Amino acid sequence: MSAIYRSRRAVVPLLLGVLLTVGACRRDEGPEHLARAEAKHAELVERGVPPKDPAWDAVMGELEKVPPDSKAYAEAQRRLSRLKELRTTPLPRRPLSRPGVPEGGSHSLDEQGLHPHDHPGETDGGR
Image 1 (cartoon, helix red, strand yellow):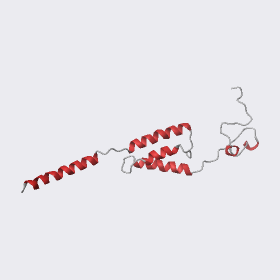
Image 2 (cartoon, helix red, strand yellow):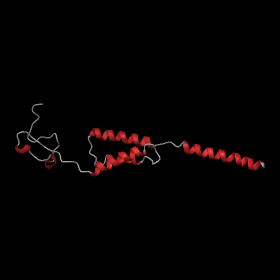
Image 3 (cartoon, rainbow, N blue to C red):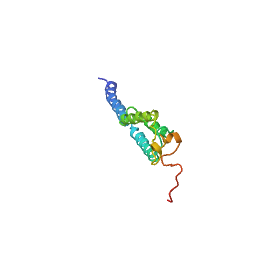
Image 4 (tube, rainbow, N blue to C red):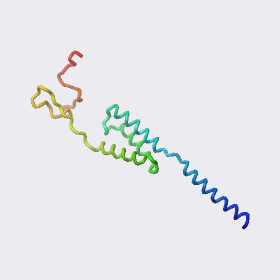
């Protein structure tokens, strides 16, 4: 066997090893995107931001950045699907019942454009 042939035989496994090592060292960025989405999600829930608010676009954007080959991909897709579902589902009407008003009052706060804690005609009661 010639020296050139033997050196080629030694180089091929070395190159394959280097290529496999480079591929294996690629960092999975999915969990980082998922963690950022979770932090933004918690903040929006804490503030009571409704799902249709544009502030949720940042959460969805982070979830969409999780690459398909990431270990966090399945969880990101599950959460993204749920957010999209919440954004397209209409919220139920909020009931309003007031003691002493015939039939409990209005059918819905939405009809009056009131916040659930607003009570027309009432004062703070000296608080």
